[in-house]
Amino acid sequence: MTDKRRHSWTEIRDSIRQMILDSTYGPGDKLPRDEEFAARFGCARSTVHRAMRDLAESGVVERRRKGGTMVRRDPVTRATLNIPITRLEVEQKGSVYQYQLIRQSVQATTPAIMANFGLPEPRPMLRVEALHLADSRPYIFEDRWICLETVPEIASVDLTRDSANEWLVRNRPYSRCDLRLYARPGTESDSEVLQSKIGDALFVMERTTWIGEDPITSLRAVAHPGYQLVTQG
Amino acid sequence: MTDKRRHSWTEIRDSIRQMILDSTYGPGDKLPRDEEFAARFGCARSTVHRAMRDLAESGVVERRRKGGTMVRRDPVTRATLNIPITRLEVEQKGSVYQYQLIRQSVQATTPAIMANFGLPEPRPMLRVEALHLADSRPYIFEDRWICLETVPEIASVDLTRDSANEWLVRNRPYSRCDLRLYARPGTESDSEVLQSKIGDALFVMERTTWIGEDPITSLRAVAHPGYQLVTQG
DNA sequence: AAGTGGTCTAGACCACCTC
DNA sequence: AGGTGGTCTAGACCACTTG
Image (cartoon, rainbow over all chains, first blue to last red; front, side, top):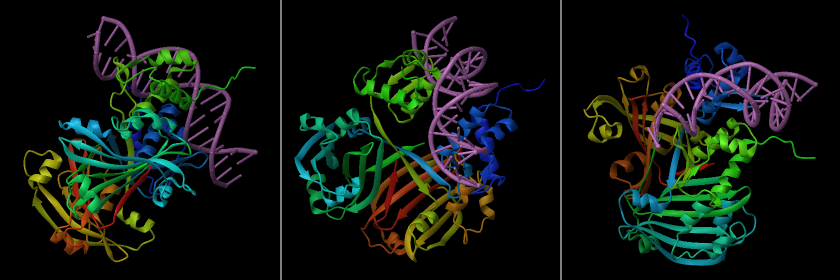
């Protein structure tokens, strides 16, 4: 009796991936149309589509309407970073979380922030500097700019109690997020808030978000010495 | 005349997301079944499914068979890191790429590497230390361990010519990848390969990959001072 | 203009998990 | 054991983009 089990999209994805590794289809080659694959595998076109979407998301192939499906010339390793709300990150380590608002004012954007957002002209935004603490020790210092035109409600949030980080994550979805990670030697002003030494290697995360074309927030988060960003996928 | 346009899954996703932001459904709440939503929106269940899958992938909801769909209590920001082959990263900046093999030998895994892989016992692996250069200047130094049982073919690759980075990405798919990012002060041995100064803030990426349960490779990549990891999504 | 991937439908069955 | 999400099918139409 023949195996009448239906083809699963993961099987089909793995078969196609194997053909790519086999060099049946090399970098830059055009793959057969979904319909063609469906006929070969004896499954529905939508099942091939599901498999292809997975390969596209993981960076193995590139798809274009009318253009077809190509094997990517430059394979990439894709990793998903989960960036939790800082309070939860601290609490999940079993530490006590505290938060301190350091400064808050409306200022015109600096050239660096304008560059982050891609704005041609300066714009007044709410600048918030705040410190997150774990077990009463500095954990992350954040210097954040929030666009008042896009997020007017932020003006009525009591930022001495609730962190802008948490309020924004819970209340403002974003459609685009730029991220920049690097190491930087600690400065004198870092040492004041983070209790670090001048020259310490500090881990910095810069994040800028938009909803549609409208800027939401741009922030630079500087972590205490020894901080690690971990992901598993 | 009524609008007969079909509902798109993005519209439905946005509607559901809006209800969550509206607190129609709060953190931890159970959402209606997909079928129920389909009836309300007047669309097929699979369209609701498509919308829900997107919300689940972006960390807004959590789904379980029989358990239903819940609004996540702890919203997370998810960002996808694209980690290209180092050669391409250098070339895309318009620089000239070079590669130098520094050391290569079979050694028993150190406790740190065993911990990365979750191995209970030491195991012989190929250790490769290599330097990637951009315009003749040190770019990234990598210290890599490759499991000879999982990747026996690596023994026949000429690692003086081709980087293990490139060979593995092109030839070995992985099913799991752990990533750890942090900043570290430069040591004396860093300064030898990276032409950095002792105490410089260096950006470090540690990556460990498996295929199924089998270890593939674990590496620590130390970047030159000033390196930035950038993503856009 | 036409070919390709993207989406939507309606229905069926399956697999997992909680109840 | 039963309810829920996950998958698969077959078919249709749509939208993008390239030849």
